[in-house]
Length: 436
Ligand code: ASP
Image (cartoon, rainbow, N blue to C red):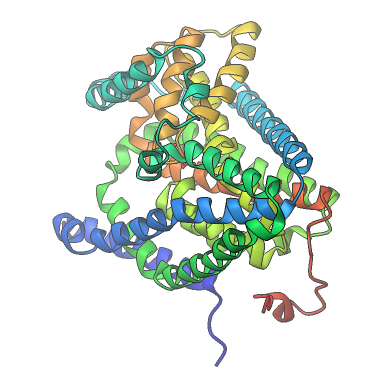
């Protein structure tokens, strides 16, 4: 019997997790799920995080060294950042447009608003404090933060991925600049280690259906009551509609116009990464899966993917920026504020920068939202309004963040003539494509 494709296995795990979590919440088994089921989800996320930093180092060094030409790196770097910025600005603009059209803030009455403000004031206060810590630093601090003062300490902190990327790029460049025979022992070491790491990711993914089951069951028992969520329904639907437009209209048009991939082919290739993104709410934890899917199932050359994806996971967050735009307008509307055009343009700018600055971990986008609110003169305490529904929206926006990274990697690969799209006569011949 043919084994079920990975994305189906994960999807079934997710559905069972949702059903079980729902049932467990009804039966009041919350503590049982948290004690006995959630840890398996945590183990799964930990395994992905564990492999993320070694993967970035090894695949980036191998990828850059294989480019064999410094000018190619700067050209590719420029293109990558350009594409990332472009997709982010499109995302924020869609968010603003929808929020102005739908006016989700007008659907929440003052009573529900005050109740949410009271109930989540403490949680929101913590996020505001976190954001204030970040704001205290000077304007150039984000650039200073890219350069580690100690590579080994950067490697031990999953939050310092840009520093790791910076150092790995330097090693790759160093390898290009020294004579080839001297570089060879190092490059062959890293390229064989790269194979090992990709194999480990395959092994980790065997546990994905169980991991996502546990993660979703735990999320369901920890979710606030339905009545709270009801007040935020229109806001949530506005965010989800924006994310859906991005995935189904914008990305699909870009993919089919620019690359030879059909969009169905693209989605089928990337689906396991999207499902893991949904379950973990972390682009960084999903990175190993995204890299494996993009290279082995979409035909993106490894030297492109290993450069474009780690950078994307940390700086490219279309879903987050769209959410920040909608959330800012929603909070303003709920407080009866009218935002003029110049403030809205300011939101495009700050949400773009805030999404770049958001860490690729759960609810990071919400911390950076505080900065967007502050710049636009919207009360930061309004964060309490959207707190209850943030986790489900985080899951959805992380899917978009990861999809956008994957899309840009295919675009860059196409422009560099490094997209090896398999000729699909019969889907089964292609999925999963045989690389070896
Ligand atoms: N969870 C998101 C990510 O990892 C970031 C966010 O929007 O909170 O991509």
